[in-house]
Image 1 (cartoon, rainbow, N blue to C red):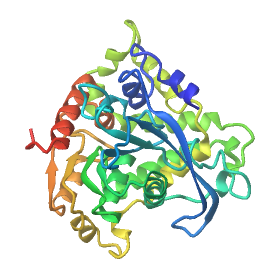
Image 2 (image 1 turned 135 degrees about the vertical axis):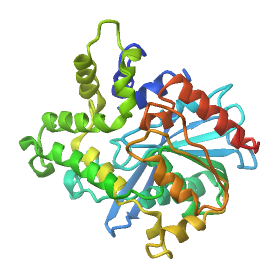
Image 3 (image 1 turned 60 degrees about the vertical axis):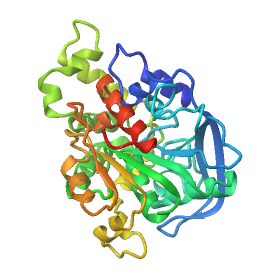
Length: 371
């Protein structure tokens, strides 16, 4: 998977998955891969995974006091390289000083997923895991394996931001700080319908066969990628033809769209793609016990300082949703990313986005006033 993802990202001259590309263009050295196994892991749905596997990466050294760790939970279909744009000397997170742990979500094809779990839970029979399931599993990793009882910060982009916010509610005293970029504490109706449309595009391929395919339903995956692409960037990004910045001279609009569509989910498994979309759809921190669906009360329980950074032009997690949530969070610094790059702005998709994020997150980590 790592070899395939490295090939997928490619060079800066070729537009592929912009989030993976931003990571590839960052620090040359990366995290070291590890795996943590939890026996008989009970998911929120009640299904038991006999062996729940969490793949994660580490950079830096855990100090003797075990108090210099930062958790970076992965985003949709991402691996441990999803935050390379934030890591390194001169960046917000310096592995020479910090111990960085990048966890990979259930369903990404490396951690326990529909594609790599044996029967009776293989493929479409794998349970829909939730954001809280992912937080629970990583909490066990940190406390049980590393003996970490407190984090310097939890920092997350997109579905990683969903996890970061959930950490603040499930384990409110476990971290000094929280950073959430391009993500919200709940998936609202418009986002649920969008994801339903993407799932419908994938499953309309007859080769999908209810998830029991013998070869990947490539037409369905391509259709899903095309729908995904229509929401990925802002309308102004398309109007200004910013796609030209990452393509060879002479590339036409149609060529750029076809290349990005073909490569966006290249090598990913269809059931894995759907599993993480279902996880995304279901998320609502208000359903964390004991809040019984009260989103405002759940948000009000966050005690750690939060740097909330939506992308000003995000169509996946609109900034107005984050702005509304921020009203209920007591120690919240709300700092939208001024970008035309839509959702990927929260992962440093352009050099300006990466600078903005590193500057503000770095200052926040140092306890400095908001820039």
